Length: 69
Image (cartoon, rainbow, N blue to C red):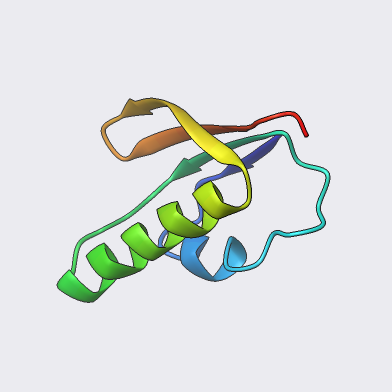
């Protein structure tokens, strides 16, 4: 499990997580500006393409689980 609350750096850290053996990601996604809203959606798409599915959301806190391959 990877848990991130890193005040806006989640976009950079999660940019490329391919190859890491992480099954579950808990992340607080900050979206105070318009450009960061776009970054948020790009991040969600990247996670989806890598097999992660959102299973919970509470405010800006997201939980993703990678499906078994």
